Image 1 (cartoon, rainbow, N blue to C red):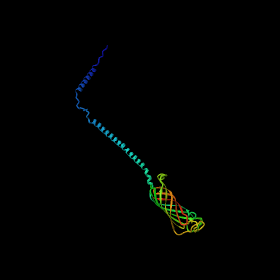
Image 2: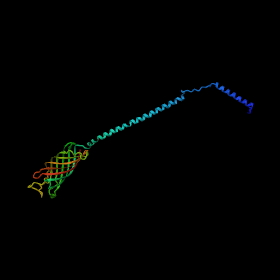
Image 3: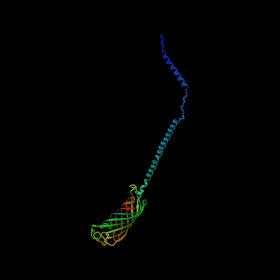
Image 4: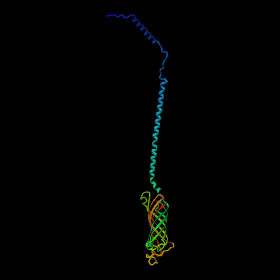
Length: 283
């Protein structure tokens, strides 16, 4: 075993360091701080930011929810109203056809041929005829009234060309009842309104230069036993009866009809005319 001898200077340095450290430790233990640092939960810098954030978030959420709910609740309202309106419109459709047909008083015009029969047949050829109508007809009434004036100009039969004077002219004034037959009104739908009717009544025939085939034994002219013409205007009462069809919508009615207009003359068979009229009435 060997002993090491430490120099005296080294021992002195170590002792000095030991004494210095001990002094510093003692001074630290007995020194009191001059400034205190308060640490509490009531510091303003820590609490205020938390309250501001909470209030802001609360109001923002409430505003968004209120606006969205209001819009969604109000949207179904107009849809319900539109649905009710559409149902009402559909229910009113059956009433529309009534607006397309007008009835009551009317004025009409017609035109067509008039065929001679009876004592007029062999001595006259067909006439060109026209007609003026004035009447009243209810939309659902079975009976209507009509007054019409028919005018016809007959042409010459081939055996009398240039032999008996001017062409005969005939006016027929007719006062009639017009009977609408039920059950066929809507045969072609609500518009046009389809009507089948019968017509008949009293007639007054007013004529001149009318060629008439006389009874046997009368004084006649020509090979067909024709009576001498009378240039004076003459009238006779008689009757008319016939029928027709019409198509009626709004204020307009188109018609086609035919009837027999008959009257008696002295020394001749019954004279008959059959006008066939195509025309229009306006209500």
